[in-house]
Structure formats: structure tokens, C-alpha cells
Image 1 (cartoon, helix red, strand yellow):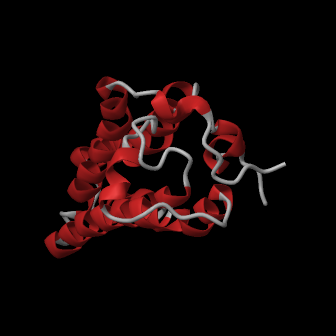
Image 2 (image 1 turned 180 degrees about the vertical axis):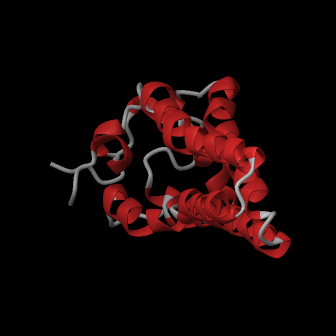
Length: 171
């Protein structure tokens, strides 16, 4: 059975700042590494990537967060629950899981566009610098960020059973 925006007892909970930083700093590092990987090909593409990355986070706040149980609270492990209400109002009537699945595609390019540029550069213009940036990007994006989410940020979340990131459940 699916819960729809019920208010679990987590709303009095405050996620500590260190946990919010732990959740967000690797994402910031991912964006910077992506920029550094793309820049040798095109400074305009690199800047466009950073603009897109920022836009995708704002999109997440506006299109996904309003449906979350943590909207308007300090209980969100990534801090978005406190930021999103400054841009939009709470929404009801649809499940968080459905909305999340519909809009999560917006952040996918943040992982795969720099990966494509890295592959291109490693094949066409190999350098140790690009190799190191590529490894750091892959490690941050595909190991560190998911591990932090699953083992720290989301591990004790009261709504993890309703979250597609944690359960993989389909509607």
C-alpha cells in the first residue's frame, strides 16, 4: 500500500548541518569535475553544463520536492525540504514515488554527459589529467554519492519505504 503525503513523525526532526553538507558536497564536486572534464573540448559546453546542473537541481526542488513528506521541514537528508518551499508550494494528490519517477530524468545528464566527454577525450586526446578527472568523476558520481545516500543520508529516513531511490519500487 502506498502512502500519499502523510505526515510521518519526522517533521520535528532536524537533520544536522554536517549531514546536509555530506549529502551535497559530493554533488558539487561532481559538477566541478564534470566542468573540468568538458572544458578541454569547449569552455562554452563546460559553462553550459554548470548552468544545466544548477537548473536540474532547481527543477528537482520545484517538480519533485513539493510532493515529498519532508517538504517544508528540516528532516530532509539533503536539505531540499527547507529550500524548496522558497520556490513553490506543497502539492498533493499524486504519490511522491510517481512524481519522482516522472522527473528524475532531469538530473541524469549530470552523470552521463561528462562521462561521454571523458570517454571521447580518453580515446581522442588521452592525458593523465583527463584520466585522473575521469576516475575521480566516476568514483564520486557512481560510488560516493550513492553510498552516502543509501548508508548515511537515507538510511534512517522515515519515508525510505515510499522513496523510489531507496526501494526501486514501481507504481
